[in-house]
Image (cartoon, rainbow over all chains, first blue to last red):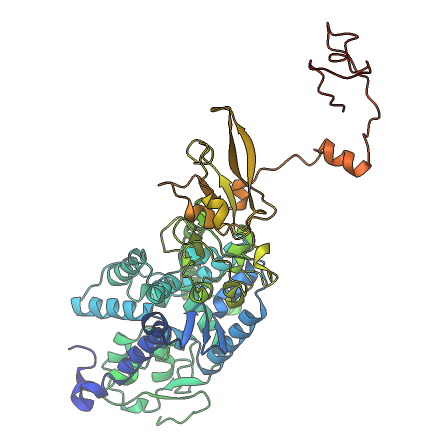
Length: 283
Length: 281
């Protein structure tokens, strides 16, 4: 049986895809904010996700790019500093990897690859260690320091894809195909869940963030495993759901992207969004 | 960890659950580190040609020197968005220019040298330095009249288009009056670029009437030569000093012209024709 079948029966199709739909709307809206300018002449957000100016007042800069620049030996100007502080503050407060699940356009790609891999029943390939991303993160900063340039940005699929979408640049199709093929054929959730240094950076940033998913109705769990099958970071669920090494029902792992798919696919309504101080639990 | 006081001697080393777990853990770390290094090395290899941009790719006004620029530009495209003439573009992935960085190609769209320099104002990081307040101080590149064989002015015509369109006319490009050796009775007015004033806006290259421009704007590092540090220009030193630095020189006659006013500068009197131009060091 496909994951979420019971949830669809219990909650209806929309109920069982609520957070997924909301996330897609959010991801598309972010792109739309950048595209109303070049397409219709209505400028809301200018630039791209690396650095932007919204409504001519709000500067936002990606803190990972900011840190790469620092590592390369350059102190970016005040606008970039303020922008990076706002973005870093937001994700540190609300949830580091919200970026991955709710903003990053590559997520749509890797979610689709994961879905297709599930549907086709592919088991091929070899999954790298989930900590590889931290090594890539360290490596990207070290490489920046060694070469005094943002080396990672030559190949960073995240910025390449979003920049191509917003500026209508060609040439990024190879990146899209590479990521998709890797996630589909080589490693389940390979890019976002194991390699991407940007996700690792945001994960570290949001270690103590407020927004959390709780398995507060974990006693209702019937071990159908649907949440594990759809979760992009399945290792984060067990401690909360099965009290493995913790008593709290909160998913506190920094790798959790707050995507809410576990809430969607659970026919028993075990999971909910809450804040990190909510320790209510039925067991 | 096993308690050493109750350690079971029968167990061969390396098979206890703890050491298996440790080995697994270390293996995991090694694999992760290896993959991380590989990915980073790949990026390094892909990123290194960054300092060799194609000659036709010019950076926006105020761009830091290429090496610094590549550490400062976050590739957000705000300069591109605020360029009122759509001169600036972002480099696509897989091209020769560092992907996502802004550039322009003079022959396609030249820089209009806006007084308020909106691209520099838009830059959040300072990769386009805010120290550039006067667009005439910009050094986006340097114009080079690269083809003397097809430039119409070199052929003796009065095209002058590059000179006329130059926003810094008579400073960045002047027309130098030179005798036309071929016809022996006309002048050639040769467009001549002066690096001190050229901003590299690209107007000259854009406007060159030839199918392929005879004057091209290139990155300064590519276009400009450099004298050795110790070279001094005699005429400049002399002007600074207020006279020859080595005093009067021994003047020698032209052999066979001794004692003749037109061949021997030691002889006073009017030089009528002859070889003595009157030049003295």
